Image (cartoon, rainbow, N blue to C red; front, side, top):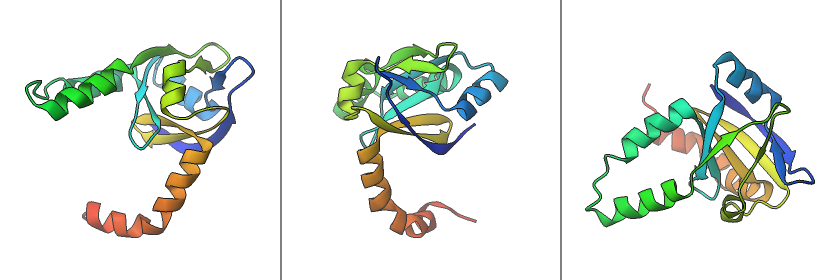
Length: 145
């Protein structure tokens, strides 16, 4: 559903403009509400409401008697907030999430199929640089043809 890599900056009021292609996908799929939360590798995860519900179903069955499950769920769900994109395609990222992802001004927004990831530009460049040379190796270990 969401694909591509887009560079953006926060505006003077700290808002992020969602890429027009993502807004088109939302319109085509009747997506009006998102959930934004702490992601992995230092980015933010943004899910459509339907995808959020699917993810929540997976995580809420983790046993609360297991310490690691409790830790993950606490951090993941306590960071979550509902996001509605305004008519001009803008959204406001809460301060605690910007702090988590080290977002100051420059951002990279990437589509990862069922989710959008929001990265501080420097963190994305660091991640990409450290991972791109291993792309084929990673694929060999994960993908069966």
